[in-house]
Every structure is written in C-alpha cells, then in structure tokens.
Image (cartoon, rainbow over all chains, first blue to last red; front, side, top):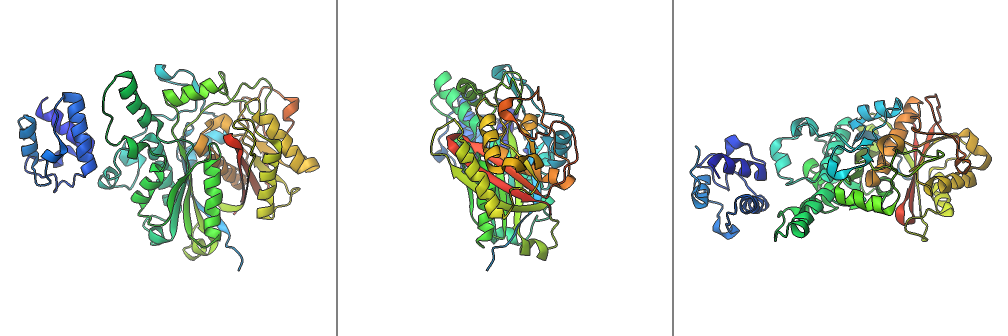
Amino acid sequence: MNPDDLTALIAKETGLPVERLLPQATLETLDISSIDLVSMLFELEDQYGIEIQPEELTREMTLQQLFDRIGVASSQ
Amino acid sequence: MTAPRVLVTGMGCVSGLGRGVAANWRRARSSDGAIRALASPATAGIAAWTQEPPGDEVRFPGVEADRLRRLGRLDPLSAFALEAAIEAVADAGLGGHPSLAHRTAILVGCGSGGNATIETAYERLFAHGQPKVHPQTIPSSMIAAPAAHLSMLLGVHGAAFTLSSACASSAHALGEAMHMIRAGRADVVIAGGSEACLTLGSLTGWRSLGVLASDTCRPFSRDRKGMVLGEGAAILVLESEDHALARGARILGELAGYGLSSDAGHMTAPDVAGIAAAILAAHEDAGLALDEPILYSSHGTGTALNDPAETAALHRVYGASLSRHRVIATKSAHGHMIGATGAMEFLLGLLALREGAPPPILNHLGPDPDCDLPLVLESQTFEPDALVSASIAFGGLNAVLIGRRA
C-alpha cells in the first residue's frame, strides 16, 4: 500500500475531497464521523489486511499519525 | 370544518425511461419504452433499467458535497429517492422554505430494502466465507433509509417514515399522505416511492416465482407472458390548498381521493371483489360519479392473472359507463417499479390529464377476450377531468388514487 492508496481509501470512505486530507488535519477538524471511521478501518483490513481497532484512534489524532500507525509514509 | 383540498405542487422521478419528469413524460408519451436486455451477464434477462447515474453534482443539484457525505453510504434505493425528491422539491419551489422544518412530513413507499447492499454483504459471508461485512450494511440497506436520508437532506423534523405494501407501497404512501394533510397533521408531505430491485438475488427471486416475461410487458394483450421489472423512484410534493395558495405555488393537479382494500385471501392471486371495493371507495372519497369520463391508469402488469381480474373489476364497477373511460398501462414503458410504481403511474397519469394525451399501451399484439377494455393503443386526444390510478399488490393489498386536473 502506498500513500496515495491510503489517501484514496480515506477519501472514498469519508466522502472528503483529497485536497482536504492534509497530514496535520485531525479526525476532529475533518469532522469524520465514527461510522465513517469504522468504515475506513473495515476497508483497510479488507483490502490490505491491516487491522486497527477503533479504540486505537482518537479525535485528536492527525492524519500523519494515522499514516504512521498504519506504517505508510505520508505523501505530503 | 371541511378537510382541506390536497394539491400536487411538485414532481420528480427517475426510471428506465430517464432522469427527471420531462424525460420520462417525453418517452412515455411517444411510445418509447425502456424495457431491454440487461447489460450485466450476471443478471441475464430483460428489465427497464436505469443508465449509470451522472456525477453527484448533476444528480443531486444544489446539494453541497458536505451535506451529501453526512448521509453515509447510499444504496441505489436511497439514491433514487433523493434524486426524485430533490427534483420534486425544486419543482415546487419549496427549497429552503420555513415550512420544511416543522410542517412537512415524508412518506416513502418501498417494496423491499437496499437489495444491492444486502446481497453484497451476503456474498461475502456465504460465497467467500469472509467473517465481516461493511459496517454500514444495516443503515444503508434498511427499508427506512430513504425516509431518513430525505429528512436529513431537506431538514425535515416532522413525521418521516417508510411504508411498505409490496407493489402498492407508493400508492398507499400518497393516499396516507393525503390524509395527513386533511387531518391537519402537516401542510406539506413529500410522498412517493422508491425501489432498487434489479440485483441478482432479487431478480432470481422474481424469476423463480414464474411471473416474469421473457419477451416484454404486454398489458391486456393476447399472448402476454408476464411482468417485467423496472427500478427508480417517483416523488410528489402534496400540499394543503391554503398553504399552496398562500405562497403562490404552481398547481399541477389535485389528489382528490383514496380508496383501499385488503383481499384477505391469497398472497399472489388478485381478487376481483377486492379490487372493485378499492376503486369504489376511491370514487366515494373523491365524490366522483362512476359515469364521469375518467382516465384509468391500470395496475396492468401483463401477467396471466392480474389483467383479467382487473378487467372484471372494471366491468363490475363501471358497467355500461366503462366505454366512456380510457385505460392506460404505463408499466409497458417503465416496467414494474414495485414500491415506486404506484407513484410513478399517478405522476404520469396527472401529466396525461394536464396534456389531454394518454400515453399509449406498448407491445399490444391483439385483443384478449378476457381483457375487453377501452384501451389506449395509439396516440389520441382524451381530455377528462379525473384520473383513477390503481395499484393491486401481492398480499391482496389494493390502493386506488384519484387525481384531478388543476
């Protein structure tokens, strides 16, 4: 999985435009709902076998931290 | 106090005939039907299927992307309903109107829930042995989703729910919506139906029942072989006369009567007495004389059982006056849209009243003595003041609507 794949996955599951998915943005500032978050984690596991529990994520987490947790270098 | 008249002030629809009322009416009127071979090899057969939708900004005009994303995953069932409702509300000039928040209700008729979403989940579980399904499987596929999605998108805080009575769902929805306005429970009701049933599982279920035609839909014709499925949505804006006049709304017609009955007999066989009872109840409700010329929009599925039963009911109700009426069957153009079909047929029937131009029945091969009716088989001028639109559903659930010209 490369950074663009991950960005595309997040954009698809949250309905957010890619240009808003900046590394310093947090899940809270992006206003990603809990159901979108769970959907995102489902696709991550389903498509890439990367398993992350929802409780590992917080509203304050930045996308950079999320990318780090998944083990993908941020593209931006 | 007399009950308020219930007017139609907006319309929207999507079907195999196209997207939007104008496209649907143009094709229905010009005998350009939508039934054709299914494109996907996984779902062989024929249906009146919709083309791949355009992008969200075209499909849902005026809706900001951020509002849309808050709705979550949309099954085609909800997407059809949203598309038709956005058109209807814009057509009514009600966008952003203060009445939407607290004096408006939403009533959507659906025969089934989000088939595509459910089948995708089941395929994972049963075909591929995967342990999980998408987290939004339940909220996206629930039969109440279209009503919920509409309330969220339009900011409607009043009553919002889905009503289900198989192939009469949206006729019941419109009729019950009329009564909500008559009772003073709402000034405006956004009502109609939606169905998205052209999935492998749903199609196979219908095919297994043995009611689908292999060639096409031929209502009231000799050598008819059955029904053909369609998909889509039709939504109308109903409004009390006072509310409509106060805001200077354009009046498209009146929903003047509603009659219903339950056969309490058989799951799939129609009952002549039950159909006749619903038609008579609708006439009585509207105060419409049986010998006043009407455009009768039939249930007209093209099945072996429906068409003769409906014919017998019409002879029983109208007797010698039947020859003054004209019978149309628009399922021959847009297919059987199940939960959406009653609203679609009422919508097209009202347009036919307005224009004095009933859309011809398609694919008719010649008379069947068991279906002896004054059928509209070619373009003609017919200008009655009233429409009688009948829905005769599985389970013996019958609903009949009466429309009047504005």
